Amino acid sequence: MKTTLKYILFIGWITVINFVGNEVKGNNVALENEINQQIESSLNFSDNEIVIEGTVITPHRAFHQISIFTSCVVEVNTIFNGEIEEGVIEVFAEGGTIGYTTEIIHHGQVHFPPVGSTAIFRLKKIDNNEERKDLQSSTPLKLYYCVDIEYIPPGYNPRPKNVEKQIYQKLESEFGRKRQLVIAPATSNQIAMDYAEASYLRQRGAIYQLLPITETKKEDHIGFRLLLSSTSSIEYLHSGELIVHYNEEAFGSHIVSEGNLIYKIRRDTREDSYGHSNLVPEHFEVTVSDIHFNKFKIAWRNTSSPDGCMQLFPRKENIYLAELYFLPKAFNKSAKIRLKGYGERYDYQMDSIVPFDYVAASPQGCLYSNVEQLMPATITDIFPDKVFEPLDTVQLIGKHLKNSKVSIYGKPIRDGYVIHNSDTLIQMVIPLLLRKNANLSDELKMTSGKIALTKTCIDELEVKTFSKENIKIRMR
Figure 1 (cartoon, rainbow, N blue to C red):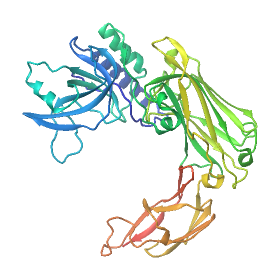
Figure 2 (figure 1 turned 135 degrees about the vertical axis):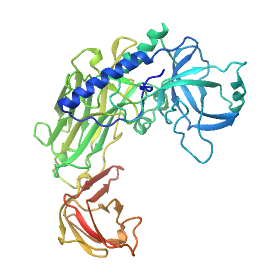
Figure 3 (figure 1 turned 45 degrees about the vertical axis):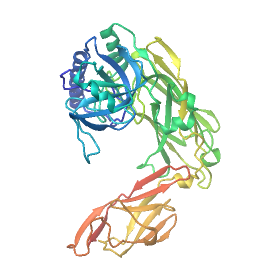
Figure 4 (figure 1 turned 30 degrees about the horizontal axis):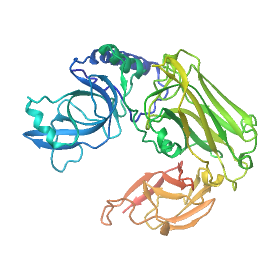
């Protein structure tokens, strides 16, 4: 399979895709067409090969036996061709490094994915008459020779719009047989593991996640990003809804109709997007409405064909659904924000819309932090207005500053340098050495950068903001 696209299936990370201009969009379309052609030409396997989808469950190991080999342990999730009885195997390829190097970069033409990643593996058995047969003694697991791996590395973009049709069904057509499901990949998402019983972890689910917005222009609001991903295997969201409970003492009642909730649905406006980016496609209908005095509902529904369902990936492969901004009414009250989600997916094998086995949500219980803890700190002034030197005193003036940890140039300021910390004022001394490699004998030089303020809530969430103006320090 000598193509530039040697990596097809992905369970990993994604770079957030924002709106693009017409010229960039044209380039993306051309690149997608090229990728689709490469997918068509690359999924050709010989009949004597074993083709599986598997998850890497151990780091790579290198060993020497006549020549150098590299291997990793793989859990078998799905079989597309050939027969394999083992649920966990070890696969190897020629090449690698033995010594102090802890990360194997490549192994000839085979690139092993990182731990926790799922990929398509093309394998061959080791025949008894092969020279490689002695390698079996190096592992207690059944050893298979890896011919090739199909895997999209993190950050690769664009990716297949529909993995089910472009990868799974293509393989089934190639081999003239239905795939054999062995076991779904285990979820590594802590939210799902905290939410579900052990029996659920290999079932098909979705995860709604609420994360604080670190930098917001809505300084009087508490901002959150709302994300959605699947628990283990790739899924296709047809419809979903999220019910958000909140403390009416903190935010008031009926906050949608009363205008105390500002929301922005993140949309993918590119033509023919069909949910392959990480934003909500235009053909998804989205509604936001009050359903009780202290709860509202956000609902998503696919108005297109089943192929228009949003493709959900596990791990950090999130769909960026929306931004939510709560306007507080009382700062000394608990936010008590709690999520409860539902969802339906399109199952290509059953050719029908079915519910997810379960839908997890973060936070699992609720946000017990007081509103004040969740409010982003805002620096309105740095006083005095001058170029500071080490051991100078500086005042940070603003609001919601209390309990904020200060960092300058990415280096945390220890508590001993903070003289005063209140809601409107932080007074501190510039440390003598801010940079790791600073030296008192260095020539004086001026540096400039933002001040970062971080609040850590009792719910283990971090709310981080930055000063609008740079602080200027003449470093020693």
